[in-house]
Amino acid sequence: MPQIRGLGYLTVQTRDIDRWRELTVDALGLQETTGPHADGLYLRMDERAARLIVLPGDADKVVSVGWEVRDQFGLAAVARDVEAAGTAVKSLSQAECDERRVEAGIAFEDPTGTPVEVFFGPVLDHSPVVTKHAHRFVTGDQGMGHVVLPTTCPQETVEFYTEVLGFLPRGAIRLGGGTPDAPPRRVRFMGVNQRHHSLAVCPAPHGEPPGLVHLMIEVEEIDTVGRALDEVNRRGFSLSSTLGRHTNDKAISFYVRAPGGWDIEYGCDGLLVDETYYTAEEITADSYWGHDWSGSEPLAAFSQER
Image 1 (cartoon, rainbow, N blue to C red):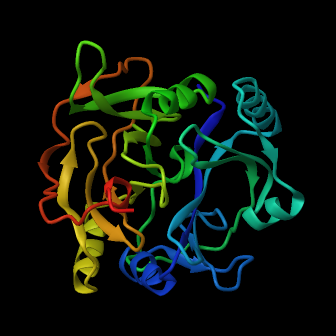
Image 2: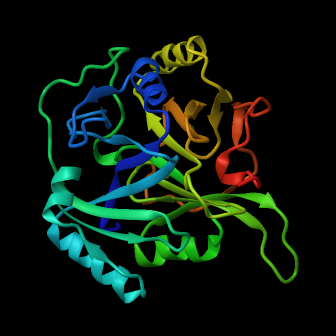
């Protein structure tokens, strides 16, 4: 298995932190806590001090995608592999580690410019997690969830994550195109644990912020998904996709547009992959049922008007 064990945290910047708070806390039921930045929004899902961090700023963008390794030896191995691939690696200072509430970490950029961090030793909060819908999130050995990243150089990006960082291919979906001289475009899914995919990479027309297509958050029960969907609708958030079940990870989910032009996927019942028998496959439909995208606003990552 890869040195990287799962998605540890996601930090984003926003121009509308109040709307972010309403979406994540009031509608989706994450627990707000405190952190180093007094004006920041720190969100708990489990014993981690914060899994999702939202900071105020003058632009909407990804600040860091944090991937977790087992220990200092795993961190050193990742640093060696990334540097050997020709990518500059920076060690996080003690102040930066304290801000992220981890023992140690490194930072670098993937081929499309996404700010990546790898860490070990997260600080834990042992108090009970208090959620709006009295629910539990699926984290633990599956990590925080998954992210889908846009890229202007899909082949190089996929090679970086698989051949340098050790992510395992978990299938693809063809977007069309393809000629005798050029392969078709595909969204490629990759995993590092039993979660079907912790990462997906999607071809995009430009590399500017926000640098994210969506973040997936998983809960234990379908009733929690339904209650959150009711709250999202009641509070006037835009649904990018209706409720549906995916063909690859089997999750039942909906997508809601977050401030900044990307989505949060909120669902349950995701597939656990058994690597003993798994082989990568190409799906031909996004979903078995539902997931109607016809009312979706354009995603920032795919808008040509920048």
